[in-house]
Every structure is written in structure tokens, then in C-alpha cells.
Image (tube, rainbow, N blue to C red):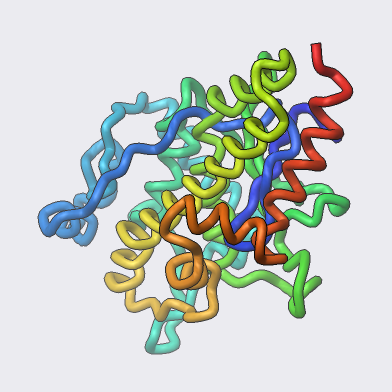
Length: 286
């Protein structure tokens, strides 16, 4: 298993973590949208990435970082064309542009809003053997961080079919949130490697982080995606992963943890981290 790739999951599928080299940095701050900030998103000032457009911008980004972020979003939409266009409730085909709040949110993440450096879009799909829909690699020494998203469904009844506009965006947004905790994930890896964390402690802390990212994705969905969809007359798919996360994913970590040990679907998180520890940490413990 590549030591520099962290695999992560969206919703009930594991997009867990495969290696210490791809980890995330600090939790994304919670920012709720009030009426004024919602109006900011819906206004024509949406084009200014360094303005507070309703998603809690707290970090000023340089022009070069923002150019990088915009370029990565452009590359992502070019490589995953299904992410670049959507159908309105009236049946009109529209394209995502730099004026869209979802583009701007992603551009800021690529620009390093949550990290000490910019990150890249990687056009390659995750390795087939992992079965992951998406993954990321954290910045590691001289290696740049990146996210990548599979174009086809990797599991289930739709396996092999093209993924939808919303599902692709859900995976990309999850990874852009997940990579933000790079320093903390690397710290956990090093502590486990040195024996400062037991296997059980290491697994529990990583599973808790997976839960936290799902909660952050819920927040993105409420505060950004739904507002964008309403503004652009986009009909949200009730079967999308965004909807599944909102309606079915546990609201508390205690409930989530209990389900891990009782539900086959949720237990996949536990199985993944058990295997990861056994393969990537145990043989190299100092």
C-alpha cells in the first residue's frame, strides 16, 4: 500500500485512509449562514473569491493561490465533464462557472484555505484495487497534496456506470474537506508508529475524524449546495449521496460508533482501519 496516499469515503462506502502520506490538517471551522450571508451568495458580488460570500471565509488568499485554485477547478471539470454541467428544473442545460458559489468554494480549498500550501487536482482515478470512489494525498515533504475522483461507480448496482453530477461533486467536496486535517492525521500516524497510541486508540480517533468530515459535508450541503441549487433552479436528486448523508447518516458520534459494531455497512469503516493498521503501521512500529 502506497505510504503517501490516504483513501477516504463518502457516506456508507469507505473512502477511508490508506496511508500516512495523505492526510488532513485541522477541522474546518463551523460557519452557519444567516440571512445576510445568504444574500451575499445570491448577489452578483459572488465573483470575488476574497469577499465573504456566505461560507465563512476567514483567510485571505493571495492572487497566485486563487489563480491556482481556479485552475484546479477548471481542470477537474474538464477531466470529469459530468461535473461541469447540470439540468435545471425547466430542462435547460447549464454550465458551472467561476461565478457559481460551488466553484468558488472548491477553488478556495484548492488554493490552500485550510492548509499551509495549495493542493492539486489529479485526473487519475483511485487505484482499482481499493474500490474507492475518491481519495486524496496530503502534502508530504516535497510531495504535493492532491485529490482524485473516480468517474464511474465502483460498487453497487450501478457499478461501472457513469456517476452523476451531484455524486461527483459530493466526492470532490468530501476529499477537499478531508485533506484539510493533514497535520493531525500525520500526527496520529506517527504516534501509532512510535507506540504512543494503541491500535484501538488509533482506529477510534480516525473513525471519529471520518464522522466529523461527514458532518462538515452536511454543513457544506446546507450552507452552499442547497443555496446554489435554489438560485440556479437545480432540482436536487433525492437519491444522491448528499441526500443520503443528510437523511440517514447518524447525527452523533456515539450513535455512529455503535452502528459500526452492529451494521455491516457501517462496520466497513472498522474493517478498513483494522486492515490499514495491520498493513501500514504494525510492520513498521519503532
